[in-house]
Length: 223
Image (cartoon, rainbow, N blue to C red; front, side, top):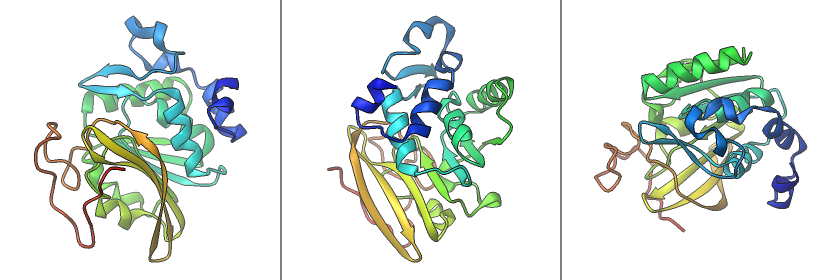
């Protein structure tokens, strides 16, 4: 709690959730000693659980009050999902790896989170059946802002937090939607695994060509 405050995380609800959700339940048993360190931890399938500070930073940028419907892209271990579930009305989470999705769903259920739905699919396409969403959080880096996610973000003060950029050089941004306007707020430099999918990278090799560009999308340089 104190460390997060010193790092600039001042939302008390976020810090309380970070202190309450048992991160050790979301990391591999053999790496449990790293659970309470401020480090990213591998969870298999070339995926990681983000370092706590990054989880807190992204969550705080969503400005959750407890009434929002949230779309999470990249369930991973389910840790970020649990933080969101503690702070929002409901969470829809999409994970492309069935093994991770099923494990996260079981883990979240065992911990008593009942306001979460986990789906297997292409996260770059979002999850249209439950759209629009008040908040969207993306835990993998896209080459540019995915058009399907833009379309599923609420026009009434919707917020999206997403890393955008090249494999080795990404910027974390909060996108605020006001009607037809998208306002970008920079949050810092980061390095995430690539967002694989139709509206993301075509392959897990992020030096390959990205997926097709949607209408109105522009290349998003790092910086």
